[in-house]
Length: 409
Image (cartoon, rainbow, N blue to C red):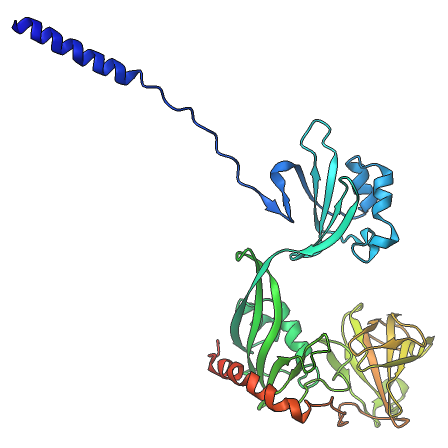
């Protein structure tokens, strides 16, 4: 009896184990690949070709390399699309993407060109031709930073890990009040500006400077970005009292240059036997090819060449003021053309009577040449009294935040 019980127990145990081992596993369902969305396209649906524009590349040549038919290429170059995306102006070094069909033909369907890290243009060849430009989704963060000048402004900014463009933006904001080639050791600044990111991770450059303060030669210069009029599509910078930092004239026609020779009515030149030869201009030395800027709005009344002046441009700003820019490598404006302050009117050269690359900047007031560095030049209009109180209230908290930033050595 005991033997039968043992046998029965073993039999039941075997059946139980056998049944457990034959349990069928559920088939694994492969996970669906995650969408890879870039520029508004799911890259999983295409064969993706990434490249950059090379020296000598053109849109037509790139498309021909990928077997895009000429009629399709020609259609994308038509005048109606040029304001959206002018394919004649591809820049060397800029990335582009070609999306091809995922089949044996691999027909190019979409061309995507990166204008910069944020802006891109698209030519969609599928079905009806589409040409458009868009922006990547970006987020912005405010950054507070500061620096003390020990060598140059640009080196100080780089040492503090700031975007190099902060250098140019500060120079632009204070172009009428601070000569950045006369900075002194110990001058210092604070700045609050936007930093832009793609998907909160990829840095995409700096946005506008919201506020800044610069201490130079014992004076303090505040700057706050403000759109004074809702109808105007740009903002300007005002100080803590509501005065516009922009002057009617830039302090110099060249950014980041040095004065190599000043206006001097009693200058003697050894080459001419130490005879007095008045120098009626201010020379700004810079490398050949450096842009020369119109120092104020006006109309070009001369764009010509003489043996002494070389290539030059002369601008009438109003009935009182006229300026002239000598020794250009090449002019960028023609007679009769209207220019705005800061427009590039030419480039530094060595044409005419000159021993080195520079621009000789000449300045007329009421028909008489004067020294612009000694003139009290007119300022732009301040905020209207009715809007000043609103402005001062708006900048109060920003000024407090600016004042609380600690200087980084």
